[in-house]
Image (cartoon, rainbow, N blue to C red; front, side, top):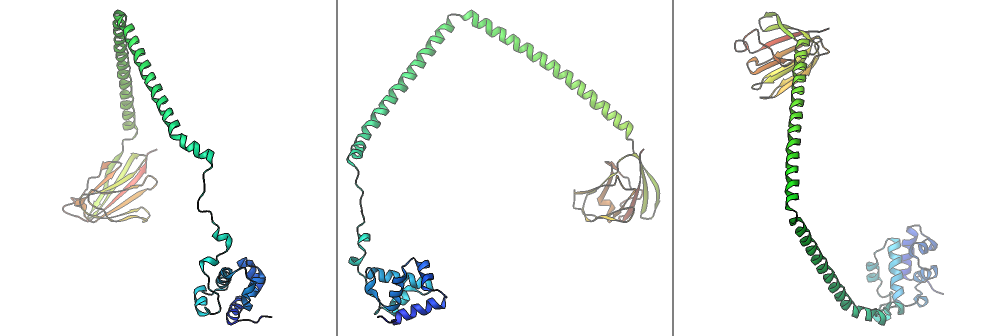
Length: 303
């Protein structure tokens, strides 16, 4: 009958602290339960060998959260030492070199010769193809030189056809360009007739000026900077649509087509240009005389 050694007691306490039974530990470590019992009781004689004793203790420690090297150091008098000659027989009998079968060895010896023959045959075939192509091209050139008049006639006919095709193509392109140009002119004329907008001054007093936009079905406002003016833009209901400084050469565009009025509050009129549908608005008050201006544009959409 065996009793728990100090090492076995230490391991058992760690196992129970983890809440593991011996069956649980067997499942975790894949070590047979009887060997686990032997480790706890210090019965190492039942083990296959000293190597397995240390290996099983190491796995046991890792499973219950103990550091194997620390345990080996602390209980070195209880754990048997292992030398290389004591390794399991199956581990020492490792075949360190695989021999090549005799048939395979002969094939390997013959492989360079086989490859050499294949290369020589490939080179011969390539030379034969090159010579055949060269002779074929030579015969073809001789046949062409026998009929110079036919070749000249063919070339002349080709040149004539090409010139004729180019002339026809150029004529068609000119007709197309003329027709497209006329269409563009007609569309531009129709657009100018249909959308002749009228931007007129209604009133002007102090820094306030009011304009009226008629004859257009769109109202697109663009405020362009020639410096760094402060600009505020609202609609007729006082809703703020833009407020801030516009950097030099930048612009702010807002579509007022669905609005009845646009109000532009300009901090530096001399650095600000206002465009209504690409038509530049002329200040009623000189921007140099009055830099701060409030411009109101009333929009009546064309029917």
